Image 1 (cartoon, rainbow, N blue to C red):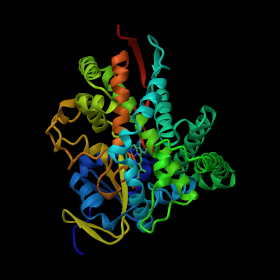
Image 2 (tube, rainbow, N blue to C red; image 1 turned 135 degrees about the horizontal axis):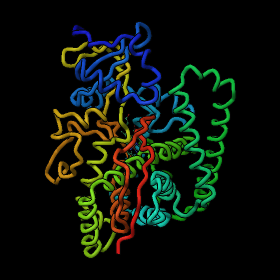
Image 3 (cartoon, rainbow, N blue to C red; image 1 turned 180 degrees about the vertical axis):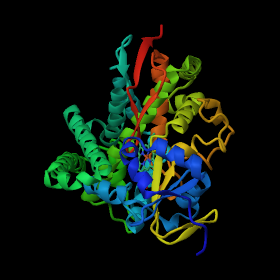
Image 4 (cartoon, protein in one colour; image 1 turned 135 degrees about the vertical axis):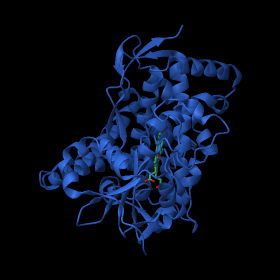
Length: 442
Ligand code: HEM
């Protein structure tokens, strides 16, 4: 296959900035996209080529149109899988396809609708913990909220608070360890021989033990809670068999990880943006008030909160929790006349695509009306990815976030003294010092 070479940044230049890039890769991406265009590579001279892209069309090509030639990178399939096992997020090929087909129905809108009361109770309990008239970092509140909703949607009331806390502690500890390994690859031998990897693997084994107990109890006493666990236990492969216990636990560990930090990041950034836009808060408050008067159940309530949904969509445009998506191509490929060598490590910057003036007018501005009903942004808006590996929990997350934000804003006026919204780009785009003040509405 022919094609031009992708413009390159030298290895020396890249290494010269390695420390800064590890702390925050976004300025490095922005600088080189500006200089070299929508696609550039780092000239490593060894190993697989490292390619960065902010082309929405290329992302769509790799994730959707020609997805068969693109596979997830080892960050998920090897490094994350080491801790969490072989669930949806970390698996590939035929195994992934079989699992996705089996699990997908549990995440259909209709099924999620049946979980709304559970999700809402978890949200209300967590929002009760906000102390009004004090400046607080809101991230930990949303972090607990997001974990509680996933655990309770899976296990209803079968799981106690102590177990939930321990599961959350382990999920977060494993995630932190993975971040350390990825950001300090030169220390891997130390993590390995110093025992920290082993310690975290043992912690995950404790989580597995808790989950095994919960699954076995449910199997022995099938109470028909109608929760996610029931749906997963009832699901059958084409040959009529059910998921093995080990596979079920891998999938649950994945839901904890995939559904927790992403959602808490999105909720935190939304609250931070709202604190800086009191007019938008007022619109949400009045929409929620009207919706509560009219709706006879939570699904109707949510369906009426159309503006709140737009606010969340716009917040995830500016601050996409999954701010890059990575892939590796099996075979040589070509895009826009550029040659994509076999086994290139491709990194699609969702952050840059979501702020590109080619696709968005005044891209730095927070303007939820971009997502007004009737508008379409599917070709350059990827908060949940695209194609067959698009987030399976996107409806779950949207429902949960609409309920959480509409309830939060109908209870409080949110403000802040800080000008800047601070970010910490790790595996996900995390908020930093999200200090906000909540004043009770009368
Ligand atoms: C705002 C919240 C969320 C965001 C922004 C988000 C984003 C994403 C993205 C971008 C992907 C695709 C990654 C790729 O293609 O490499 C993904 C996959 C996935 N997400 Fe989410 N997610 C969110 C919430 C959730 C929730 C609540 C759950 C489950 C309860 C979940 C479970 C998953 C799973 C299992 C996958 C892998 C799907 C597959 O490969 O088949 N996510 N998510």
